[in-house]
Image (cartoon, rainbow, N blue to C red; front, side, top):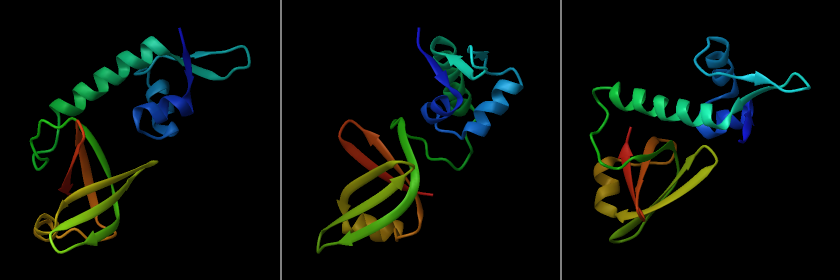
Length: 133
């Protein structure tokens, strides 16, 4: 069974290492110490916590969040907008992930997408949907 460091667990959960440490300190996330005193999370415990965390987030979402069937959301910042006559390209940096979406120029203009704006790239299969935040 794999074990994960606090930092690796944080990356897998999409939060800071400090947040994972707080969860561990409060007893929400079980940890153990290795022979060198380093705190580790067992893979099965991390998997169960990730599922519970996602369920909590899904049931307690904010009222103004869009209702959507697209489950893979990447909140980030728009780093580039390239407008053509009909089509447009929008690049979003979401943590370590760079997502590029091709959409209509009209959609970019209706959403008012500009560089430096927060946005959420939603991915379903091979399509990326961009929601203005």
